[in-house]
Image (cartoon, rainbow, N blue to C red):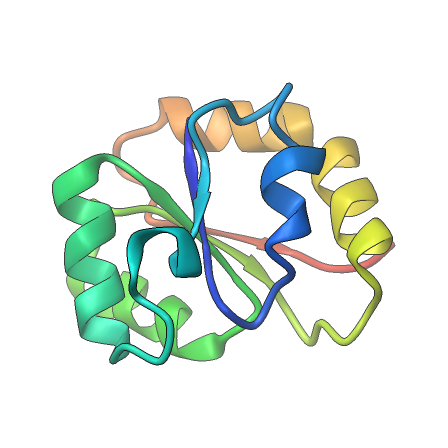
Length: 112
């Protein structure tokens, strides 16, 4: 799974998570900063990315439109980058199961 990391999360996550999610990008890497959510959604869909976000708008798109793309939502997130990295690493098995199920469009991850 490769992630398209939304602008509400640090671009540092690309490097920090490269062992788990090779080929990931931040929206700034693909010239989508400050783009409408629909443009990010369409890019992720066309390019085979899962969207990683702290934005409820992508959750709403996932529930309305369904996959692809899939959405990893860090719900109610206002934590440092290291906490986001830790939460994603702790959820790695859940994320792998989520990835393999074509019916699931989103996975909610809360800080533990």
